[in-house]
Length: 450
Image (tube, rainbow, N blue to C red):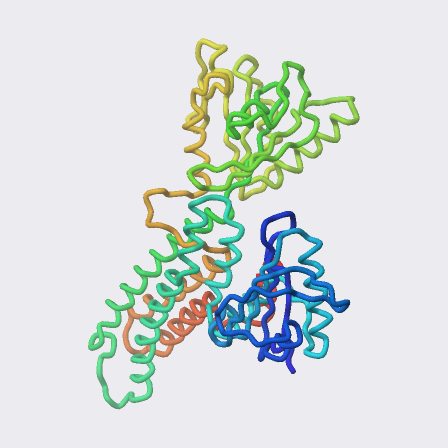
C-alpha cells in the first residue's frame, strides 16, 4: 500500500489546556479500525457519545465521535474525529491507544500538513486552497483572515482558472491554424487574437495587483528602530505598540538588547524591533547589544533612523546606509519636535514627537506605503511569493506573445509557445503543474493535524 494510502492520525487541536481536544484519523476504509476501537459501527456523519476503553478495560474518556465516509470528508478519505475533554493527559492517552489498536491497520502518525495534502491529492481542494488553510490558521489580523478565507473559498482559484482557460482557447486557435496552413487565412485578424491577448494581459495585471496586496497582508513588514542612544527608539516602540514593552529612562544605553513586538497597521502585520543605541563603547555587554543592532539593520525591510532634534548628529547616516540590505529602505525620523522651536528635515525625512504624538500618523502612513499597501485596491486574496512570481513570469510570456502578435502570421509558432508557457505558470499556482518537491516544501510548513 502506498504511503498516502495508509491511515494517519494526529491531534488536531492546539497544545494546552482547553474544554475540548480533537483527534483526527484519515485513511481508506476505516470501518474495521472503528469496530476494533469502539466495538460498534458508526452512522455516517452522525455524532455518537461513547466511551474510549483502554487495553486494561478502564475508560480513558467519554467522547463524541463522528465518522465521515469517503468521499464526503475534508481529505476525500474515510475520516474519524474524536472529540475528547481538553488537557494533554487525556488526548495523548487516546492518541496512544488509537495507535496501539491501529497497528494491524498500519495506522501511523501524520506528518505536518498531511491531512490537507491528502485533500489536495484527492482533488478536494487545489493548491491555492491548501495554502489558504495554513494562512487562515496563521492570520494575525481580521484583514488577513478575510483574505485567506477568500482564497480558501475558491475566489482566487476561479480567477486563475478562468484566465488559464482564456489563454488555452486562444492557444488552441493558434495551433489549429498551424496544423492547417493551406487555409491561408490571417489568423490574428480573423480571430481578433490581438484584442483577446490585450484582454488577457489586463486581467492578469489585475490579478497580480490583488495578489501583491495579499502578499503584503501575509508577510507584512520588518521595521528596525536604530540610532544614537536617547533618540527615542524605545519610546517610539511603546507608542506604536500602545503598550510599555520597552524600558524608557533618561540614561543613555538603557536598551542593551533588541526588543521585538508585532503590531497591526491597517491590518498589516508589522514587526518593530527596538535596538541598542549605536555608539562607541568600552562596555562589553553594551557592545554585544550594538553588534546585534547592526545585524538587525542588515535584515530589516525598513530602518527607521531616529535622530534627536536637540542633538541632530548625522554621523551614522553613511554607516547605516552601508550596512543595510540593498532591498531595504532607510527612513530618517527626527524626534523630539516638542523640545525645539523648529527643524528642517530633508524632503524625504519625517519629523515627529513621540511625547505629543505629532507626526505619528504620518509615520504609520509612510510605513504602509513602504510595505506596498494600497487600501483603495479591491479586496486582496492571501498570496505567497510563489504566486506573485508565477504571475509575473506569466505576464512576461503574455507580453512577449504580444510582441510576436505585432508582427504577422509568420511567427505563430512563437506566439503559441509563449501562450503555452504562460498557461503552465498559471497551472503551477493551482497545482495542476507542480513538481513533487515543491509540494513537500509547501505542506511541511503546516501544523500537525491539519
